[in-house]
Image (cartoon, rainbow, N blue to C red; front, side, top):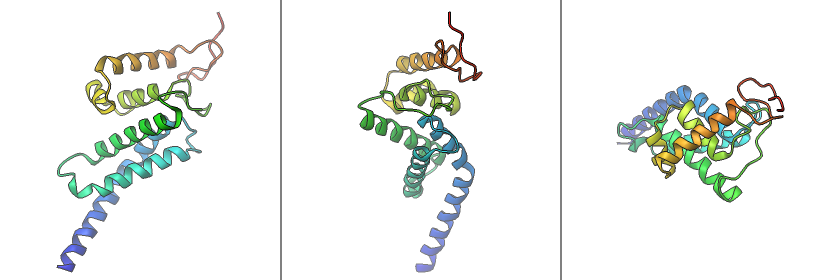
Length: 167
């Protein structure tokens, strides 16, 4: 009985290690985009990643065919949203790192943009995950995209890195 349990634990550990080897880099990049930290100085993003992976590992045996990456991504997004809500009293403006391409965006805009464009989550799924109407997710994503593509005067564009000219 002990040998069987030890064998199951070893298999579980190997499966999870393989998952982490394949998914951790992308999840860390998503978390870094969410927190708008510099890629080489991202303690909040790393903490989000560790919490998401720990949550996924804790529920590993209960996945039953569910995608572990989807589970980790959902936890990462909801943890970011909840943490931002508690820290800033809603989706107010956190102080992002100036070098982050998503620095001009609010946390809610970053969250929706990362889910929709970087992670490829469908509008309906993002809305359900965040508890928002689909139309709201669509509007926020459009506004965030416009903000990045057409920055206000004096603010560097996330796409080109060049400051917009004053009119």
